[in-house]
Length: 237
Image 1 (tube, rainbow, N blue to C red):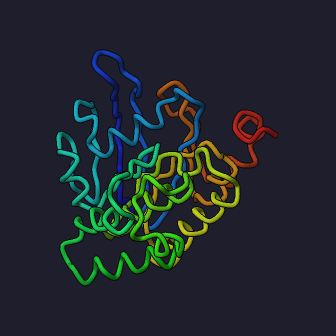
Image 2: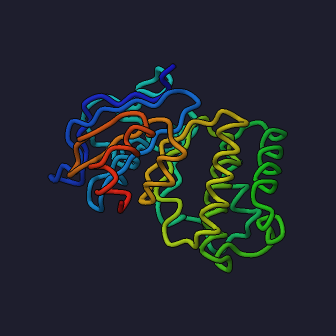
Image 3: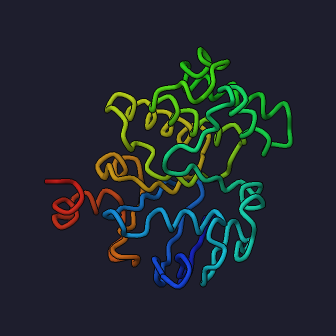
């Protein structure tokens, strides 16, 4: 069953259209990857979906509700939560306080405590550092915190923008292992933008390729991983 549907969406900044006539679907409980080179429009896509670019054309529907013109805060309260590129944690707040900000979206206090406990299970280092300011964490720990803050709110779907960017391979594996756990065990739906194409395709069931703001290829992730053109362009093979 489709959870997120995008039809003929055009979006950009001021008079400049970055995305043109983009359509895609994400099934409930599935992981969909979006691949593309720098400047292809991947980050713009997630910003449009989360309401940060309200002046876009086309139709975005989340679980049957049109998101067109909806404010970002309301979209987040529907359960569509954006984890932006660059982490976006609050550096002067502690780890615990950052997670509390995320849990604010969850109106059920007991559920919020349960979700926060789940974050500490996924990322034990955050529990160890829960009283430290986020600005003192390593880059990998800050990425864990950004993901954990989103999960603390009990989202129905995550929009993930480059979660592996700038991180050591060991930390990348930890983050993707945590993502796989919540997808497999809790049925969380994800739209994943990721430069690490091999990692993204290994996790996703379906994938789209953006080229200069337009969808130029799509299909089951395993098929795209075996496609010679995709392998040469995105997998360095």
